Picture 1 (tube, rainbow, N blue to C red):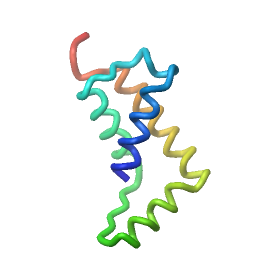
Picture 2: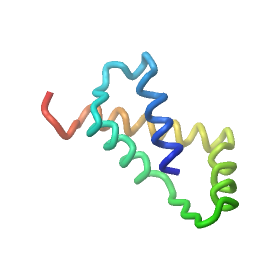
Picture 3: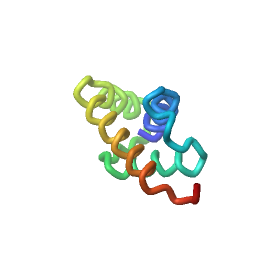
Length: 85
C-alpha cells in the first residue's frame, strides 16, 4: 500500500490542480502518512499476497476511494503544514 500511495502522491503533486500546495519533503511525507492512516492496512508476506492486494486496490471503486482520501490529505496538510512559510 505504501508504494501505491507514495506513487500517487507524486502523480497528484505534479498535476496543475495541486501546484499551489507545498512540495517539500516534509509535507509530502505528511500527506503519505495521513493517507495511509485513513486507509485499511494490508499486511502481506508473500509475492502472491502482494499481488492480491494490488488487484484489490486496483478496482475502479477502490481507486476512486483511495484518490478521494489522498486528495483530502493533500488539502489538510496544505491547510495545516507542520512548518513555517
